[in-house]
Amino acid sequence: MLDLGLPHQRYVNGVPTPFAVYRPSNVFGGGAIVADAQALGVAHYSALGVLQARQHELETRESVLIAAAEGAANPEAVLEALANSADERQVIGRELGELKAQIAGEVERRDRETKAPAAAMSEDEAVSKAVEAADKAEAAAPKPFKTLGQQLSAVHAAAIAKQNGGQIDPRLTAIQEFQRTQAAIHGASETVGADGGFLVQTDFNNELLGEIIAAGNLASLTTPREIGANSNSVKFNVFKESSRATGSRYGGVRAYWLAEGGTKTASRPKMDQVEITLQKMAAMYVATDELLADTTALESFVRPAFVEEMAFTLDDALYRGTGAGMPLGILNSDALVTVSKETGQAADTVVLENIDKMLVRILPGSFTKSTWYINQELFPQLWNLAQVIGVGGVPAFIPPGGAGASPYGTLRGRPVVPIEYASAPGDLGDILLADWKQYVLIRKGGIQQASSIHVYFDTDETAFRWVLRVNGRPWRSWSVTPYKGSGTLSPFVTLQAR
Picture (cartoon, rainbow, N blue to C red):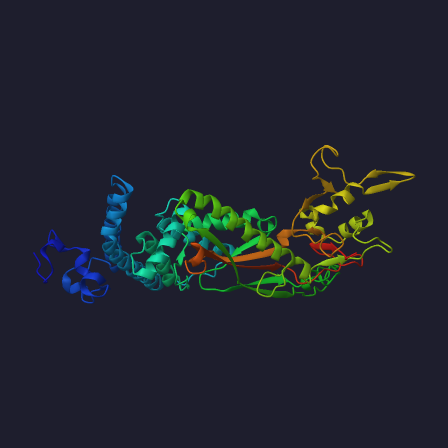
């Protein structure tokens, strides 16, 4: 048996185990691979294999501790067992963080040394790779809480613990350490509030983000883009096509008819670069101490309130945002086409001529994807729209099933949807014909949360703050002159204020 001053139990059949090569930080003061590993007789051990073996050992031990606690007879015993193992699990968490960073570094080193330079990836390949990495991180992320309400109660308790020097729920610490490790590996920066600030558990985070997007009338219709870990903005190259006239399509591409032996003329597209920088949207939810004591009630109250409010705020910005510290809304975009009102048209009205003139200004490629978005107070006027034929006429807008059924229907073949964000009747934006796939919505990561017991200390309430990084704008910053005709076209058409 070799004897290199290491404990006897660190050998198996005379061969050093991974522990003989790797020095955990909590044992020897710094996690590192022993430089003279060959002197230990383990040249056949790869550094990566050693690190992964130690990682597996620690993760197994952590699982045993948690399983032992969860198997206790009652909730008090579970908490007691978790408290008893908290110090050991925190040490394990720190060492796992170091190990994961070293594993990532070793993998990167091997890739550089053993692989040929990779070919440039397409945008689709890059997105696919980012999604795959996110899925792996999601699978590896700790998920100790069964509901969002449970985690919020733990965050509230952590805020109090920070004030009196008490112990923070180790389940929160596990989530935080994992996120910090991921941030270190990918060069990202994750910050939370100092007073009870903790990142949302990964699966809850994804659920909440999905619910916010889905809850909105508009956000779910846009073209989404996820921003990578090392970026705060995104740039898109789009064709600078402001006219469909010959020689201007795609910014300058042209095809020719040639006689035999004719000379071909080169042409090229003109590109425009669109840059979108992430902005921050935040919401605050206040919960009473009584509600915080009931995790089931907390879950049922906080989720709909938080989701609906942030979804509403996001949709409203997509519709009318200024672009300063928030998304650029359609009503403030240079891509918007505004159709003039009719001569002598009464205030706050919509007439059939308005509808027809708006319809012919929609970009042809967006026609079958467009929808009418209106202030619902316009419904009575739409029901009274009529196509005059001789001395009579026919209704222009008939809901399915007639007047006694649902008010929703189609107007000139396109669906009609009432939304809260539409302007008051007569104002710009009270009616909009839009193809929302021509709007790009970027976002990064998930949702951050923090809490404070001080804001509403006198009323025994806790404030929870939620932050989402998001931004958006139309793909185009201009309208398009048609091939034949004079009126400009756009995926977004509205009616002049009356």
